[in-house]
Length: 321
Image 1 (cartoon, one colour):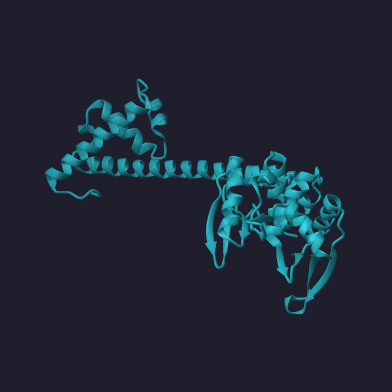
Image 2: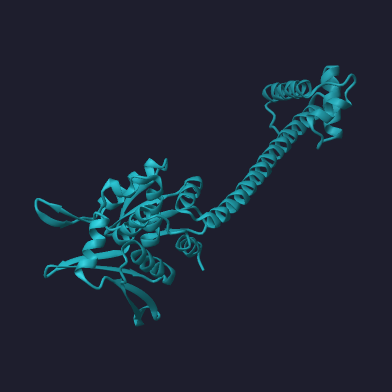
């Protein structure tokens, strides 16, 4: 089972709550995965899902919120490896109209009943109803990637207006979703791990939230270790390269004017560098009499390099002698 399926399974187990929250969740499920029709003066709502737990929750909420028993039809797709679809349909136009008016997906405008693709703000006025609406939207057309592979949560909306409505709800809860067109749909998505964690918390998927947080912590530790190792490796390479250049300069001086021609303080450093090629500047400084700090050793080695360069310029010699 995928991480996305685990999240949906957990959301179907979230307590149904008060009637106003059920109405908000039902509205989102109908908008995201339902089909509303008005033909021959008859209203009809059809909700379709491949997930048995989601179908069961939708059926239960309709029953509890409206005391309506919907019809459940199980369809098998032969072309899709015998995948089963649960189709939940209202039995009468009166029942469908009752649901649609309560969710405000049906309103009288200019004296005529008008079907809409969004709900009134009164349906999601409370924080608990916003949470329920987001939960219903995710159950209807949401998905989230495996956190081991990356952070991506999205809602597939049929219209841009639906996507923007959902976006406004999430912004009011301090999230920053983005909307992009994809084929004939509009996808609202989050790509930051912290915001996905926030949304899972808001919807009530606390177990999935903890799983994602654990993955994030492990990834963060791993990334920090990699950064430290890379930094240390880079510093080591830098140190080795500097030591090689210093050795080349000292050997060049030794083969031309001789190390004995250097001032005493530089001669000491040059001698110990040749003797201890892999030692750090700090270690070289501790060998000197009197001991010299890291910056002092570095300053003397730079002086030696300058002398080597002056000899090269004078003699036209190469860096390798």
